[in-house]
Image (tube, rainbow, N blue to C red; front, side, top):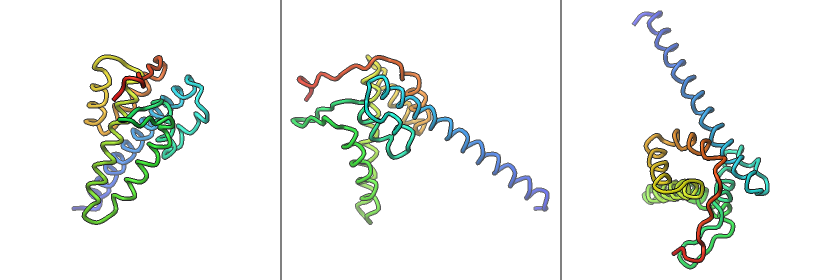
Length: 162
């Protein structure tokens, strides 16, 4: 390989990296703006936390609203979601058991995304948005959150949820 070919390869890789970073930034902004708008529309405290990467989990949980799991009602789902994801991420570093915690973290994240979509869309749309978000590694999920940001919040029926 000549020096010019090597330079061409480096420039191509740099271009792909720049494109990847630019797309990542665009998806981050769409997701954060969507969460921020949802939090503002619901008059939640500190909607600006949607712009801080880890704090987005808290905002996302609060935007979802109260969640009932069995006999437990999470009246502050933002705190529970934040602690669950961070805790599972830390535990995923444990040798041998790490993959189980990684899988659990993915399940919690996917569940939260589904609940978010179910609070702002109806019918089979939440499931469709969640599946497409998973398939595209979150790219479409960010777009969908941005698209539904001005939809009305649909509270879950806490009294009859199981």
